Each structure stands twice: as structure tokens, then as C-alpha cells.
Amino acid sequence: MSTINVTEDQLTVRLSWLDKALGLLRDQDVPRSAVTSVDVVPDGFAAVRGIRAPGSALPGRRVGTWRRPGATRFVDVRKGQPAVSVGLRGRRYSELLLGTDDAEAIAERLRA
Image (cartoon, rainbow, N blue to C red; front, side, top):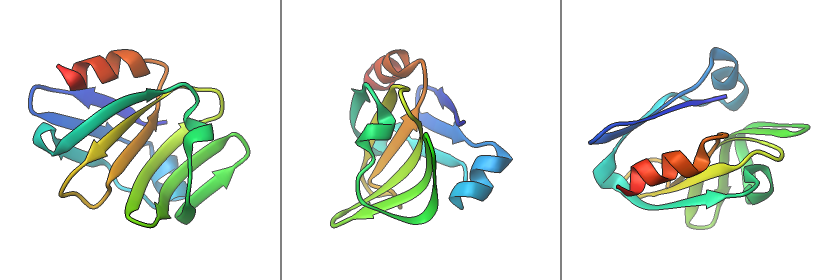
């Protein structure tokens, strides 16, 4: 599961070594100026759309990159867990979809 940290000028996402291996992902450091939208999704697992390339789709878990026309998503979610959807501009990923029990609090910090 990812660790999400929000500071005054940066959003930091740190993955466990297992998530990095399963999803072929790297930790993300995103300037707050690149954030275009922030939403809370009741079930991040159900919100995953597109084609996995690369990543893992284990039962009850999605971690990796999901692609669809015009969008590339960084995904780390679990079934039944809320998630924060963060829209980005000028970055490799157009969106981060991050499962966390603190989704509402993280969204509020990003909106502030």
C-alpha cells in the first residue's frame, strides 16, 4: 500500500518494494502546481478503467499503470477501500488513483 504525504508545495507517494515490483511503478513526487483536480472515490477498485500496461490485477487489488485514450493512470487500490483521485497536468501520469482509509482528509489537504 502506498504512503501519501501532502506538504505545502508537494504531493509525495511512496510505495512498498512489493508494490513497486508488482506494478512496475516508482515513487511519485508531484508539485502541487501540477494538481488540477481532487476527488474522493468511495471504492477505488471499482473506479479502475482502461487497459493494464504494465501492472498487476490480483483478486481484490490493482497496482500499476492503466491506460485509456487520452489518459494514463497511476493506480494503487484495494477492493472496498476509498481512494483519492488526483488529476495532473504536465506529468507522465494524467491521474493518480490512490487507495487510502484517509481519502477525505488527504483530499481536503490537497484542496487547501
